[in-house]
Image 1: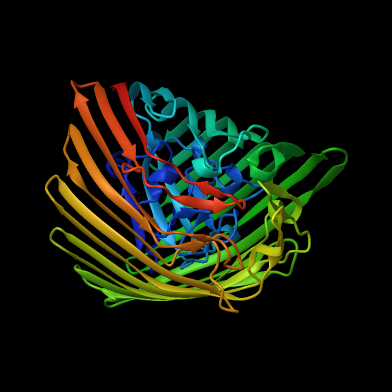
Image 2: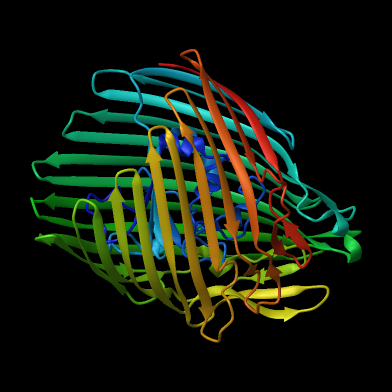
Length: 600
């Protein structure tokens, strides 16, 4: 919930700067982040086609449900949905992001319950003195996107900027052709999003104000299933430097309404019947304060945060009936984090007391150490974390095809104990990193299968008991001049205590990216691969592994015009993303060409 913490963590942090973000294909940030092994949404489908409720972030195999176990911060402000924890990736324009930092695990005690699996911090590009841009992008599947914005420095210390983008795509069929029936149509999206930012900076004091809005409509793959969302956030952040210390205070308010229809599919997908119409309004208000002070060989951070979320699920049932559920959730926490150096070793320690509102307060300690020199660093850390159930898990039922998932108002928080150790090396053009980790989870919230028939699969959210995730991840990066190459790999063995594999978690994931980046042009190509994973907790529905190729290129023409192109799943590989119980497909081959004009 806080802004960037200026203290080194005893963990490996993946950094993606603006040139690297621009070099990756993908309309939205989720597709670009998929090149980071371990990063997945609840299902394999891109946010261009996925229902928003499946767009929660998973890192290191901590998936299980649509709720995100990873905190997403946009300029220090939480960007996860206040109702469900998922992320509306259509809100976030990749062109506005200066850098992204991905931290796995919970090596710091600063963040709250949404950071059990890690945290992703997005930092917006600073407004320029005077700039304007306009872009268009078109591609297959009826894809068209327009974007534009202006920035200006009103006075020596004040900056103002605004931008907007809108996209329409017809999408693609999510049901394979051999199983398709008259009820099936393409799953597509159209959305419009905009943001206005104002900032004041005199060197010692910075004030940041932001307002953003989103409106999107989605076709979910059949004639009668649709969903739409309207959302907006107002946020403010004040930072004050005072010698070696700093104070940071932020506040935000988010309002959101999600609407959806659900249906039952007849035999052979010949008929479809409307079963429910749902409206889910929600809002959240939060604030946080952070104090930091650092010496030559030590640092200290302390603060607290408070957040209140409210939401309701209002359903009209067909042929007759109604159902309403909802409530409020207030969470708060206080924390401290410190580090101190003794020769080549730096020791870290932290503690957070978190009150999830529905149960007793939870203590979240963390500790670790790092040692090394200019070329290498060894690190180890241990931590304890918690995640409270979201309002969505507590109160909202939903249906996907002929699979129904029920809410559970009696859910309790889930917990995690983790330990990891790693080694980082840098010399010349090479950067290497290796990490091993072991996580134990208690009271795990997942979709538990209650019954399976040819006509209907019934699941319910429940605290399924204990589970563990253990594995390793490795990264190698090489760069010489404008040429670069990088590869990454993750192995995560995620199992319930009884031995079944945790659903929506592949045992092996990997990626490779290579290319050339110059001052006026760039070209990159890469491979993203994943092993097999299961759709459900009983391990009845197996999703086969896959590998997909992608590429992107940019060329500046003159001083103001840029041409770019991108292709994803270049070989048009068929990727199974889920079962309802009919197989559901992830994105086929998608390509785009674009033109962007910018004046500074």
